[in-house]
Image 1: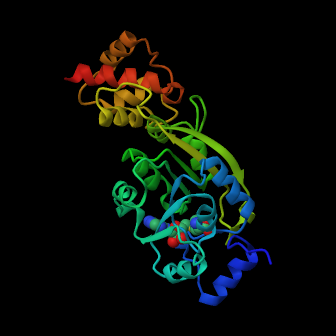
Image 2 (image 1 turned 90 degrees about the vertical axis):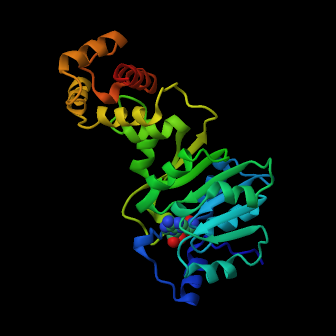
Length: 292
Ligand code: SAM
């Protein structure tokens, strides 16, 4: 008899009934019930028998099981205590999985990587993320500059588009610049609602982030850079010089801002969304050094 994977509607229902499990919407519990989608995620994640995988939110183990089959080792963080005995049962055939009962936002992921994986092992983050905290989770993981090669995650389609956007696109904003400062981002595929149980209200995409060894631009002060990027997008319909004038109202006049913009060759009548990462770096460095 062929094995029935967790990620099928019938097996998932069987587990739900066995444990009388009720989904918690507040924890973003939409479980995957389609093995093809999971295989696609794993393929794009670059998982093979030598690699390690970190999963966030294993749920009942649908993705965890496929990772256990394809990867050398899997470590998964789950916040919902009710799922621990279920995972023990559903993943009993796999000896290469460790479940950590912890909120990922509280976890010291670098320490966990050091403890659970071989020193030179390539590690990838792979997850069907809880949508209510997608951005905090991804920003934490990329900012911490973890020793992971990539992150491949199922997230809300609009958020994936924002993270992977190019300039002059309505999805391009401060989140785009923040994510692409640390990673190379691409949307791998969009996924229909029908592959989840229960079905979410929003469409989903798989986002692939490859960690950069070094930022793509040189900035003199990272915090100031991100603050200035945010200020440039504060009111999307306003020009760059108007957004900067509002932000710097205590320190610069509009004329002074125009002088600085002219010096670096950026037209102040442009909108923030037209600036690429290199131009934002130029802008931030000019203001940062002028203020000192
Ligand atoms: N991986 C499973 C799947 O694809 O079927 C479940 C994915 S479900 C979208 C999100 C999972 O993340 C749930 O199991 C939920 O309990 C868990 N979760 C929610 N918030 C979390 C947090 N802060 N830390 C760790 N896990 C969390």
